[in-house]
Amino acid sequence: MNKGKVLVIGPVGSGKSTLTKRLLGMEDVPVKKTQSLEYTNWIIDSPGEYSQNPMYYRTLMATALEAKVLLIVQDATRRDCALPPNFASGFPLNPIGVITKIDHPNADIETATRFLRTVLPVGDIYLTSSVTLVGIKELKDRILSYL
Ligand SMILES: Nc1nc2c(ncn2[C@@H]2O[C@H](COP(=O)(O)OP(=O)(O)OP(=O)(O)O)[C@@H](O)[C@H]2O)c(=O)[nH]1
Ligand SMILES: [Mg+2]
Image 1 (cartoon, rainbow, N blue to C red):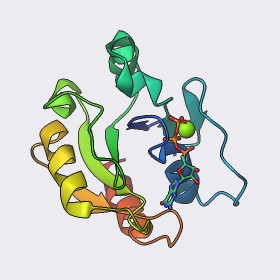
Image 2 (cartoon, helix red, strand yellow; image 1 turned 135 degrees about the vertical axis):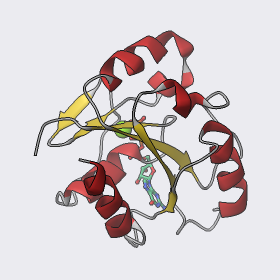
Image 3 (tube, protein in one colour; image 1 turned 90 degrees about the vertical axis):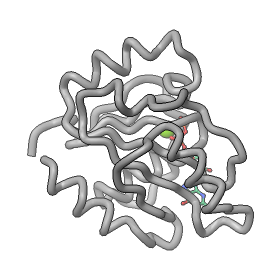
C-alpha cells in the first residue's frame, strides 16, 4: 500500500500515535511525544500542536495533498475541542471522526461526539479504545475502503 495516505490530526495527548500503532498492528512499545510529521506505512501522524496552533494549518493543508483520508481525533476525556468549526470541510479528503479513550473512567462519549460534530458536521464517527481495542478493526476496515 502507498505511503502516507491517512493524515491523523487532533490535539496534544489525544491518542493519535497510540491509535496509529493499533491501526498498523505494531507491537506495544510506549509512544513518545510526536515532534514532527511521522510517516509510517500508510499513516501520517501529526504533532498535536499542529491542530492546536493555526500557524500550522497551512502545513496540515499541504500534507493533505498527499493523502486520501483525514482522521480527526477527539479525546473522550476532554471537555473542549481543539479545532475550529467545520475544519474538516477545508480538506480535499475523506474525513472520518474518531473518539479515543472510551475505556477511560472519565470518558464522556456524548460530549465528545458533540465537540467532534462541530469539526465534522457530517460523516462517520468511530468510538475507539487503544487499550481494549474496541472499534479499532471497524475503523481500519473503513479507512482501507477508501485507499
Ligand atoms: N485510557 C486510554 N489511554 C489512552 C488511549 N490512547 C492513548 N492513551 C494515552 O494517552 C496518552 C497520549 O497518547 P499519544 O498517543 O501519545 O497522544 P498523541 O495524540 O499522539 O499526542 P502528541 O504526540 O503529543 O500530539 C498516552 O499516555 C496514552 O497511553 C486509550 O484508548 N485509552
Ligand atoms: Mg503523538
